Length: 568
Image 1 (cartoon, rainbow, N blue to C red):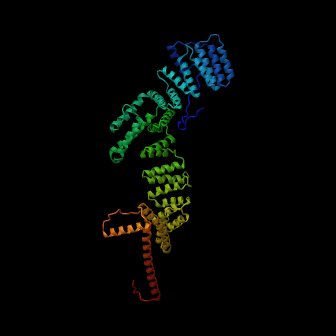
Image 2 (cartoon, helix red, strand yellow):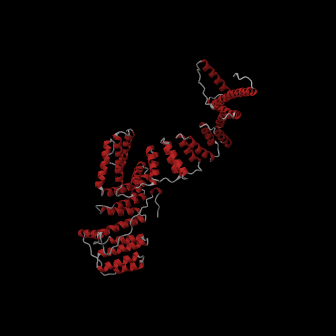
Image 3 (cartoon, one colour):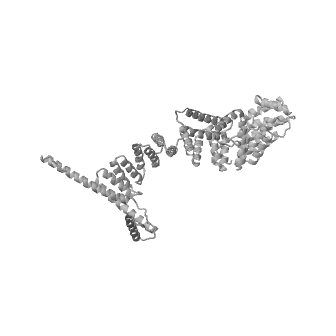
């Protein structure tokens, strides 16, 4: 059998088992009595009824051969009414169905239709079964024509017939026709709930008028309209103080809209119908309609896949608040299970400037063993969330874990700068040293500057000098490359560029106007940074050296018992 597309996972099924009742009862009796009032049909003798009952019992016990013998015995009777013959053929069709001889089954069900005095209920059931069997045979054109034949003779057609037709149309890639069939099924089903639905729809349109939400009165999707009105009310709620009486009214309005939308969605329709509709819109690339269907699905059949898909569609349409709301609902409902899903939720919180919520969620997932801790990217998201939440200590823990998992030194350097910011200069030096040793750094000059600064703060002046000297080597190299690139851009030699830049600098210092193009080269700032820090370091070393000399002199005087009149 041909498989449906992955997007169209419908678990589609129809009741394929016809009801064989030798002695009708209950609803079947009432139905056939009504039919007998409008159409003269043949009766069933007690002899035939007993034989049919025996055949049914044998077939249900999977004694097919014995059951067929009972049916053949009936057909051997000299006189059979149209009704009796139709019932026997119905049984024969069912047996062929059990044997998966669908063509044979169809031929017997067609014999049911040939009798003139056969109840309409049996005829309708045979027609429906024929349509279903054609679908089973993947003969979709005949499926459609068979359903059309049924619909033509019914004043109140069954919604599932429209769905059978729509599914066949989907398989034939007649997506627009399939949409028409599915919406027909939905309309037929919901029309039976008319009074209740009408009141709910009125509640929503009244709210739309109250909050001046425009909509197409000739084509109203009330659930989508309720969502649009809710957005407007939420905006008003955000601008209203909680102490204001209006705040409570707006909250109640939102709850009412949510309840009306939910009750409107909970109707006689089936989940598979909406999945078929979603698949058709997807094939036609009508993503707004796909989103509309998903909004219906999450209300009535709340499932992880629907919330996640809806969140993704909101993301594509740049509806950030709706995206995070959908994904957050999936989280709150306990649908999130994978590491990547929790990381995504944290990233969505970060995108909405809610870093503390992101940090709490992801930290708990890490502590619970849900999030993969062997991926440095997960630790980086956690570190970012804690940093933005102003919890530097917790951020550094996450950053340190991330740095352990990388082969290059970039994260170690980031950790070094973070440790420097909280005054842990020894930790900064260690992390910077690790990062430089690992290598593969984007900016070796800046890495040595970070290390030199922390060594300076830790009063390791000689180490600091050495770091700044190494930083200067890489900074000068980058500066030379930048100058050469600038010269190439200006179509000058390097020497000519240097002369022109010095000349323009002198003119600017003298306040003279430069008539030609002013040359501006993008040079690395690390050259100046190293120069400034080296000068500052030199002065600091002189100051500390002088101070140490003075202290040594004081200690010497105190030790010798000389005068306490000291000069500085």
